[in-house]
Image (tube, rainbow, N blue to C red; front, side, top):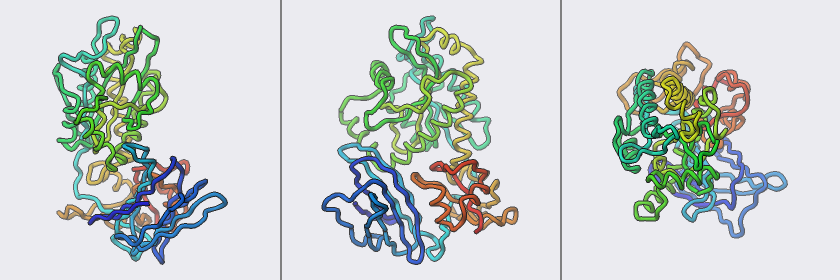
Length: 431
């Protein structure tokens, strides 16, 4: 276990020999953060760190017959965010806890803050290939760069018509743009999401067809399809695998812990987009796939790559030529994006404001850039707080944190089951 402290928060990092499940909950009077690990043991020579930042002490003990409990005694109330990281750059599996001071340490409720305003979420749309790089070719002569630009332009038009959204294109004509420049455009504009549009292909005119969605893999455990894509796209400079200085720099950026949250968001939006694609074309892969695409390597912008169909398949090539199919593809991607931002609204955006209004909350009408969410409005006096779900949190743990029942939270948020999704917002009813 390692500790570090900044002006904003205290971070605890647990080094793990393998991935594992854990439960996290908080207790008051005194303030404690409790971690329960099933089927786990402390490594030989494990030492608890001393007081550090918000942390007063760390205690360990048994949990059940074969588990470990770790108790973090805090100096005051805290807000906790947690996430798991896969091995990378010589590091093992890790569990990261970020501990932020609560604005109201004397209460069990942790108040969240949000910037004032209703800015639009910015979607960076990247038409794959372009210029001297035509991408893959269909047997009927259709070029990938033509398809991707057509779909991207349709998607951008839809995004710009959508309340609370705005689009930028990495290219709007037949121009070649280096790979690193594509995601740098998204970062420079401070985009909330990066969507790269492509058309898949396979060698020797194989029968593969359908759409798929890809997110970044940092540990090289791609599927066979991912490995082939990495090899084929590398020929047209889409995948960067050389170990030059720039690649080392990018790798070090990817290892930064900030990438964990971005990759988690990428998986979530990828799942939403994939679900929307099901209705218009058979899926090549039924789940979000992973590959080491250069264009997905932005360390702080959630990024997905959509393979709209197999241009090497005669049937899919006919679809990709079709104006109606291109429109359906753009509609489906927008539907997935809208679902993601509706359930996972960034603070200070139109989507966050709509979420707050739906649950009877009000944004403080002040020029203070860090104005907090007000107490519940008269429209819904039974809502006591907003909670943004962190990775690893469970509905039972959230209910315990606020002292309300799971059923009460489910009823307040129209949840059908006990699953909660990281990044989503929950209305917490009064106890």
